[in-house]
Image (cartoon, rainbow, N blue to C red; front, side, top):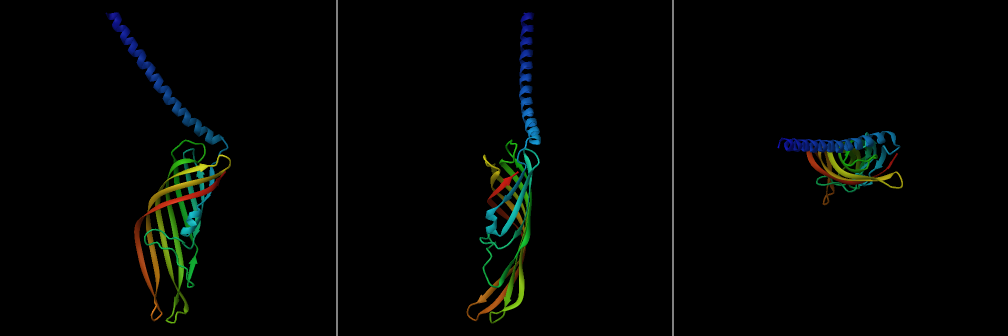
Length: 235
């Protein structure tokens, strides 16, 4: 009886020892896989830099140039600088397109973006499904020339200025071509926009041909949504 009990205890000890060794071996494989990717990312000649353009933003009155730099096989930073101009399609709500008028002059102003990106899949190059957080600064400015009672330009003007500070969160997918270093980057997301708007609106009475101008100030915060596609080249 005592010998049978000792055999039972020995069998349980052997089973537990094998199970622990097996679990430790599986965990070690995961760690080795991560270490191997990190080591290869440091030594393999792969894409770590990307220059990108966003053609759709041109219709919204912005032309930025993006630069993405991979910091590891999972993390990268993305910076952009550009200029703003005429908005052809406007946005949602009270963000109308810029009208065509002989008395309106668009002024190019700076725009800037700074973000950090986390890729959700393991890859040696910056591609795959990702989450992206970003801060963006935009300034849209145009001068509106005043008219007198006869409809003639006076040479004086009022400045319409819109300054936006955005906090944005995107989910997207970036893919390198299998035959070259060209890539595409599709994304969607939402954010919060802090607005400082100095709005000038021109009114004309069609009966007596009288021009008047209304100036309003707005300081508020609104939600915004985003959808776009970038194209770029990696090196």
